[in-house]
Image 1 (cartoon, rainbow, N blue to C red):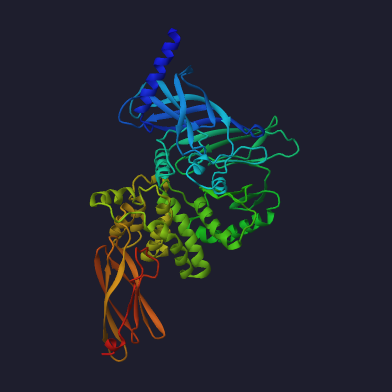
Image 2 (cartoon, one colour):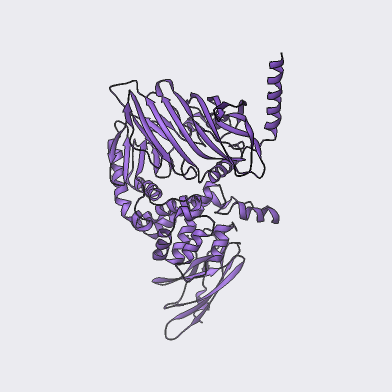
Length: 574
């Protein structure tokens, strides 16, 4: 009776503590895990050690450890002694099952701020195909399964990390897919805390089929080819930074097309598509190397068994169906992947922004500037309406900081908007200056938001502080350019001088191209127009001007319907 009462007291105390838990107090600075996979049983088992650092301002007596709800905690120890913990389901869409198995652990003693504690952990369970988090918010089953395709199975295994399957311990507040960017914000905070964390992963895969040995792929920073030991495939892998990539593993009967900069692992019957992709990567490699340097690691592409599965990339590791590959699309995807192999950054606007920028560079290289601008234009609607116009002045000020490129966790911003920012920088400083700035970038030295802007500023005599303030440090929304007036004066003998005034009705400034069209030709100049201001420029043309157009699509705008200004021919002739 006393034993039951004691347990009840511990349980009640844990529940009370759970209501006031700071789930993000600890940062997981290091993982040392032994992962055993049994594809025939769809199971995994993990034993290992975690190092947790208290990053909160107060001592912490309680730690929270979370894994997928399809896994079960077996033991948690410190210094070899078993610790008391209560495990319970915790609803969160950070896992494909829509829930986590959360262990609330009572530590031997309070951990002071910035101090660490080592925990020895053990858990196991199954990872099955599960799209619960998507279907419960109304996503059709087929679409849900094509996005949450993670599973361990005898024929094909592919498991992504936190945000898809929480197969290694984490600790976050609940994430909810039904709330716009909530999941991305939770993941973003986790990645920011883990940007300097590392993982040592030893993987053992049981192999029941002696005749047909599968291949194990792990997207670690260093992971030599798995070798066979007593009917198991064993690999010893190291992740340098969990803030940059999501720990992912794949097991399948792959063949490979192996090239100098990329290896394409394909399933039976997909050899032609794999070769097409490898060829496309090789052809685009010189352009990527010219801009971002030689690849620092070999890009890896792995075929997905589900032909309808949505692609997934983390760093230079790409999972995608190779059942049919269009050469042009393959080159576009390869540009993104090879850029990640050449340059990485803990800052999403740099890491993902440059990879998308590389795709625009490829299109310009192949089909001209218009093709690149059209591609970027396809991404514009996704971030035009992120900031609501009916917000109060105070909340707008908050959004300027939280939704800035240096702080945002919104993928549409740090991918699509960042791509446009890099393109605008290219137009302002030129390709040589921008290439030098990118070459000077070292991720380990990126300790503050102004690091990359300073590298770019150092390559030009132009003042760019206003630009970074409007587009990178803060989110001022988008500009809205309007040609307010164009006064024409005839010059001798046949020329015309235009004095053009451009209004910017938006809050963000930009250096925008301005084109004057006349019979048989056009002349383009560039003009800086700050937010809620105007700019004036004089343009001389050889023939009677007919139209003035501000912006060629290179600068994102909230409204492009007012960019053209027709010149009254009768007025121009005077």
